[in-house]
Amino acid sequence: MRVQRKLTGASGEPVALTIGNFDGVHRGHQAMLARLIEAAEDLRLPPAVMTFEPHPREFFAPTGAPPRQWVLVGDDFRFGRGRQGDLAFLRATARRFSVEAMRTVEVAGERASSTAVRNALAKGELAHAAALLGRNYAISGHVGHGDKRGRGLGFPTANVPLRGAPPLTGIFTVRVHGLPGGPRAGVASVGVRPTVKTDGKPLLEVFMLDFDETIYGKRITVEFLHKLRDEARFPDVETLVRQIGRDVADAREYFAVHG
Image 1 (cartoon, helix red, strand yellow):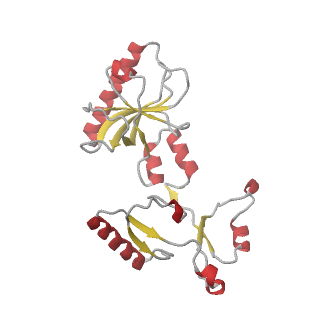
Image 2 (cartoon, one colour; image 1 turned 30 degrees about the vertical axis):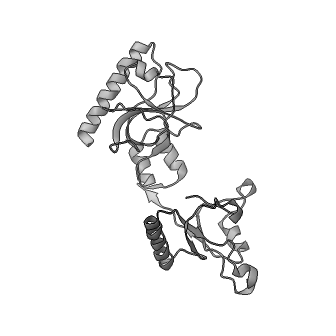
Image 3 (cartoon, helix red, strand yellow; image 1 turned 30 degrees about the horizontal axis):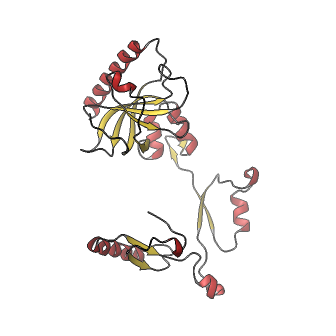
C-alpha cells in the first residue's frame, strides 16, 4: 500500500478510485472496497481510495462532528517523559474519545509481551516464542551479495544483511518463503561468523537443501523452526566445514520427522 498525504504528490497515472470518509471501515465500506478491487482488476488499473483526515465536519460543522476514535491500550501502557503518562492520566485528560485497557493475555502462565518474546528467542526457545507470537518467528529481507565463502566451502548460502543485533543467534532449521517452487527447507546461521570474520557485523545466512538457483535481489522470508546449536568459533576452516556437514544432516533428519 502506498499512502500519499497531498494531491500534489499524486503520480497522475490513471486509477480506479473510490471517495469517502471510511471512518471505521464497517461492512458497508468493506463491500465498497471489494467492488473497487474487482473493478480495478477488470480495468487493469491500480485501486485507490481518497479519504479525508480530519473528518470534513470538523472544519464545516465542528459541533456536529463525529467523536474521535475509541482508544485501546495495554494495561501497562506508558507514555511521555520518563514514562509518567499512564492509563489513569490518559482517561482523566481524554475529552473527545474513550479509553479502554486491554486485559493481560497469558500463554502457559506468562504474560504475552514483546519482552517475553525477545527473552524466548534469546534462549532459543522457538516453540515458546511461537506460542507467544501466534506464529513462528521470521526475518524478511533481500538477498545480497556476500563474500562467496559459503560456496567455496561447499555450502552456498543466501545472505540477508541485518540492520541491527538480531533477537536470536545460532544455527537453526528454517523454512524459506518467496522462492520459485514454494517454501524450501534449509539451515540458517544468525550471528557474526566468529571463525571467518572479525568485524562483528551480524548476518543471516541460509543454506537451502537441494536448491541451487541464483536469487540475488529477491525478498525472502526465513521462518525459524528449531534451534540446532549455538554459534561457535572453530580452530580452523576444516573443522567448521565438518560441523556444517553435521548441521545439514541434523536438519535433514528434522525435516524427515516433522515434514
